[in-house]
Length: 372
Ligand code: CP
Image 1 (tube, protein in one colour):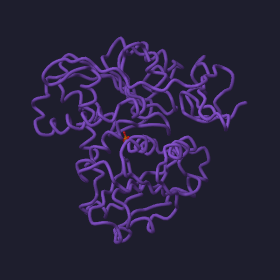
Image 2 (cartoon, helix red, strand yellow; image 1 turned 120 degrees about the horizontal axis):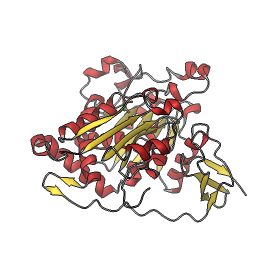
Image 3 (cartoon, protein in one colour; image 1 turned 135 degrees about the vertical axis):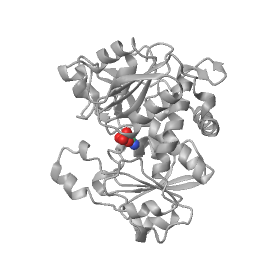
Image 4 (tube, helix red, strand yellow; image 1 turned 30 degrees about the horizontal axis):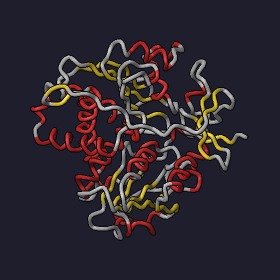
């Protein structure tokens, strides 16, 4: 990151206290939106979306407009100079001259991180491939807090595509900061959580089970987080066709569920939740989109150092542990979805992840590579 610029690439770029303060601000915005309507006057948000979006891009734009700011940007790689071969690094160098803050989505994992390295203004990761989607998590956390009244002591079922579902990875990273959380990870064998995520859960002593059985898991869940099978991340169409209908939530499957279950989905849905479930008062997925705008308003204000009462200093980013060892251009990332596979002259940088297993973590996409 450029010196003294605060970006949000992973949900861990915000402390738990900061996230709770953002949720408090979102509650204030809900109570009195007018009080925030001029906070970002003369500020500009750039939305650089190299991949399709409805909710994230439009809620970011709506958030900035509701704060009295303005927006610019593009909604597909084809309408930007990326289609002529411009790198992510150059794009961010340029656009950070035009805007005060950037929200970006890109199909490559680690693209937002590379963007932030080259931006002189804050960058928010609005989804990088199958990796992370921290602002969806902010919407999810606010939904859970408002609907359940707490973020501790919850059994969370996460169902569907846990391999490529970036919202899943960010949600788990966020929930790990709370106590009394257990996970039921429901997916076909092929779409289980990536190794770098299960390794973290194990290292942190998290309580989790992996299963393929949604109905057997239902009675114990406080939250059920359904996800779409991420067609766009599959390299094998036949495999997608085989797995695409793995889970379809219908009213009868909810018969054994708790009366106060919170049914979530980051959306878009294809057919993972029958529209009949929409009538169930436990369905919270459209409410998530409502929360998303308020959380994005709170985040924009936070990163720009603005409050409804005036400017304030943006706090320094949470300190990260220094890696024990860094390898630079010694090994290369094997993940074809990593930004390092396409970005011009990007150094291959790895940090030691597990000394005993001789595993190194790619700093862009978190993939693990063995090297000794
Ligand atoms: N949840 C989400 O990211 O939706 P979009 O792809 O429509 O932005």
